[in-house]
Length: 179
View (cartoon, rainbow, N blue to C red):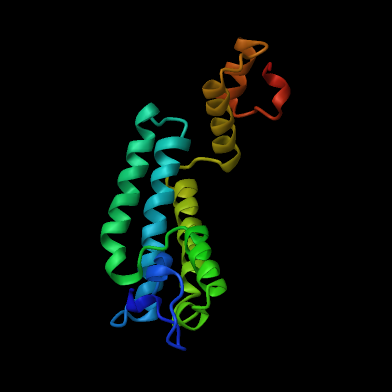
């Protein structure tokens, strides 16, 4: 048995703590918060530039860029915080470990970092995307909607009108596309 899954009463809970993220003993809470913000920033910024940006030429390679961003974040963050750049990924193991009786070793120093830092990092990534690359949020949503319709194969009712609307950034509703 793994000593990390030992409960305070000497019995054992979920093996290896089910991958719960924890702040390393030599890492300050401020440092952990900052590096989690940077890891999330890297991921969200990569997604925005490769998959959402209207002028992105990534195409089918966008998932590769996103995967590399996740890999880099994990390689850097795992020794310090376990890499909790996704709050849902951090929350699941914490809940299961709590149900399994390891609450005293899960909800410990710095647990809140894995829920606040990703939101702060993604906020900074979105602001950078908006102000540095001057992409309006509505335009980015329209670009994403057009991309999704291209992926799903829906045809435009009036191709010329849609192209004009896309250039002007005015796709407002689903009625523009056929089923």
